[in-house]
Length: 347
Ligand SMILES: C[S@@+](CC[C@H](N)C(=O)[O-])C[C@H]1O[C@@H](n2cnc3c(N)ncnc32)[C@H](O)[C@@H]1O
Image 1 (tube, rainbow, N blue to C red):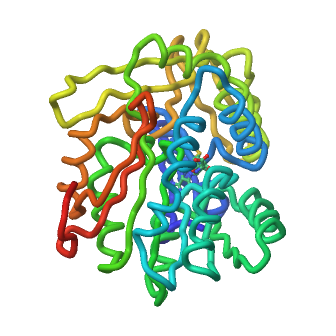
Image 2 (image 1 turned 180 degrees about the vertical axis):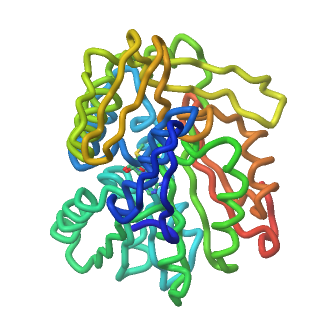
């Protein structure tokens, strides 16, 4: 499900691809692939297979530690988080994926608030529906209402609910939003929230170059290269060759006293000049040697914030910092934001 009406796309060579010929949700993929700076929307990496591979990697990796860091914070503070809204409450999980860490919050919410409705929001519709059925089996009495769609559509979907809303945005996923859109996106979410609602975001603070180059190395190629190319070939009857694209990592370091966080940029780069044909679109895409496909429309695939930057981001977006919790190494933070004009204390 996408916001608004998809429009036709005119490619660099002047061909027009009509939205009548392409399902709405794939139209944004066509737009991004044919733009001068080629990219795919980040959600596109996560079809059911991509989501399964990702969940396996983030739980088992010895070098990508986001899952473990966030899990350790939630183990200690899930009840603190649940206490931030009063009953009755609805729990919304933006970019929920498998909701594996969210289970800790679900348990704390059930203990504190009794009956609970859980709304996972994710573009990987089939995957979250399967995970939702498993959650209902594991937690009798839990109502799961999966919303297969984009983040903001998911927030709007719960805007009219009477319960207090606790929105989670875990797994460092917020930091994948383009640095140019982060404030606007938080402002849009803020506009949908009321006094008793809270937004809880998990963000990576590890800016160590060596640790990051290991964390974002070749272990991701089966997801961000092999599965992505296989999905593109399947969706558009394409002939892209996995062997002709290299997975690459770049760290852009920004001064810690500035407002822009350091960030990681991931991409596929073409090994050699090549032409790719997407048959269902009747489209050829030419790649120069080394030309890249990025994984988001913005420069960042993932940001590495510090607390000062997070606070500035919250304040610029109409939120106050209600509470935050870090792990023992202080390289991961779960931050709770309250609509600013109703928050009495900012920690
Ligand atoms: C890094 S995973 C995080 C999964 C889970 N929250 C966790 O912490 O383990 C990001 C998730 O966000 C989803 N996603 C990415 N962009 C999205 C968008 N614009 N709207 C909705 N879901 C999106 C992906 O499908 C994926 O499941």
